[in-house]
Image (cartoon, rainbow, N blue to C red):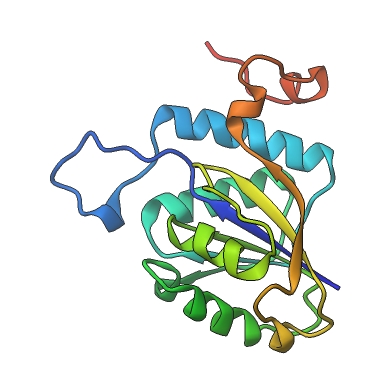
Length: 178
């Protein structure tokens, strides 16, 4: 069995109209949400064997910070093909991955990630929000065998879940605001 984490980039910054969509970074809230989600993932000891990320700046920043905060020591693969790609492209990229990787984090964009999730699972997943993390257990032994409806949702988390209640274990791992 393989596990795929579909992770949408953190909240992006639209304040500079001179930047292309590809060049937009993260808002302050995006960085704060990254602290929360990465703390949760670290406490749950969720660590991938490989991180694949879109080449867009907001996705790169998300992948970099998330990897750093959960203690990922591997190389992050940045791929232009993960920006504005169809679910078929995402599937093709995954089929090329080495089978020694049991768990892959795929950091990208919507609507592509939501469409891909719905390709992989039986139930309808409505929308992956910014910094939403959808963990999918795939009923495959080789990435080459990935196919339609081969997976089922393990869990789904998003920053909004921690808006009103944040467990003490997460709260104590977050940087203190000055």
